[in-house]
Length: 283
Image (cartoon, rainbow, N blue to C red; front, side, top):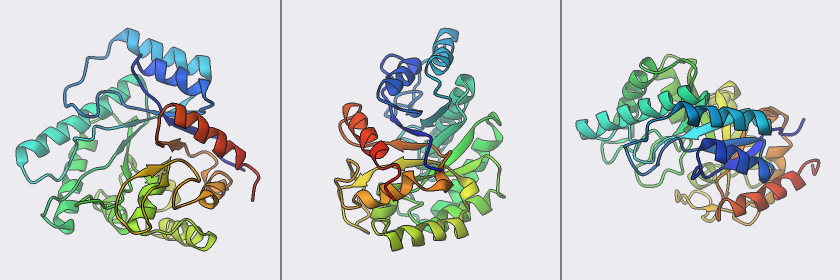
């Protein structure tokens, strides 16, 4: 069966309920949001009215699957202990806001080692993530996003994600969000049938599809293995249309939210959703 949950990251300038309704207008069946500014540590208090409006919007639209993305400031392995503490508390705050709204998933880039080395960075991320999970509501799952490996960003190899899952004892509330642009830029060639099959075979062996809870659906402006994170409209970048035709018709992802983060949002999202929907049944 083809994918049933196609959507996009939607603006929340009118609140989370606004984001759901705007997503519905452009054809989303799943939505990603920020619960607070991604560029600030401070967040506004959540009121009962805000929660009620969000829940009403879900009922009105029938959109049940909502994913949050944490602040871009979070770095769970930053060397400075005060900044690391700020990141831990910031991510805890994000998961707690999600619990208040009833959002089941939070996506996080997790961290960049900033010169400590990958091994030490992963060790500290695992230590920090354990505290985050221990101190947050069990209704919210933390999704580690695959990165392009730009700078010293961790998790551009599936092995790193697998290591973290094991280091966290296979915690039931740790999962993965795969970003198509990021994995391509990191060196996984999903642009061809052979590369697509190989990439997801490797993912299944190292991580397991039971851990894959969301997919960020983006073409890439930059070359395979460039380790540069630049999103492009679907079918217009260096990945090309074939991977996305495969993706939306892949029965393994029938109930996995596939979420656009393409340029020119939200107008670009509407166009890219039309493109994705046109790929159904093309294989």
